[in-house]
Image 1 (cartoon, one colour):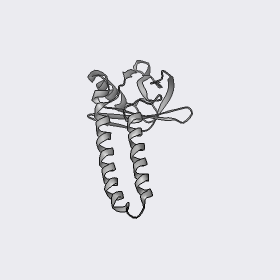
Image 2: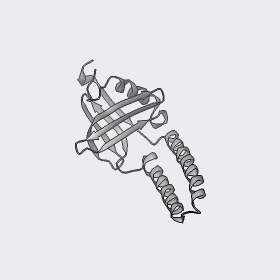
Image 3: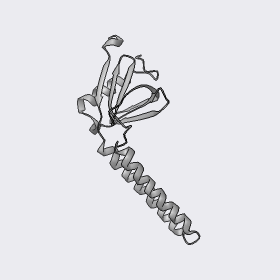
Image 4: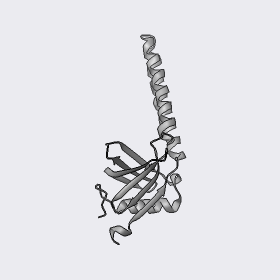
Length: 152
C-alpha cells in the first residue's frame, strides 16, 4: 500500500471514561490536600484560602479540558499520506504534525500533534470517544506511523 492509499478520517467526541477518571483523581488529590491543610490551617488561614483556590482551578480545568469543551479541542482527525489535519471544536481546520511518542494500548490511543506556531494538541482517544470501527482503524493507522508522521 503506497502513501497515497493511506487515509484516516476519525471523529472524536468527549469520553465519559476519561472525564470520570479525572473527577476521581481530582477528588482524591483534593481530599488529601484538604486533610493536610486543615491540620495546618490553625497556623495559617491563608493556606486554607490557597487550597480552596487550587480546588476551584482543578474543577475549572476538568470542565474545560477533560470534557473536550475548549474551543481549541480536537473533534476530528484527518490524515492523508503525510498531511495531518485536525478540526477544532470552533470549526477551524488546522494543519499539524505528530510530535513525541504515539501511545497505543488496548483501550487507549494518545497522539500529540503540533501546529506551525508550536501549539500542541494532545489527542487521547478511548473506545467511547469514537465508533468501534473507527477506534480500530485509528489504532492500526497509528501503529504504522513514526514520530515524523511518515509510514514505516
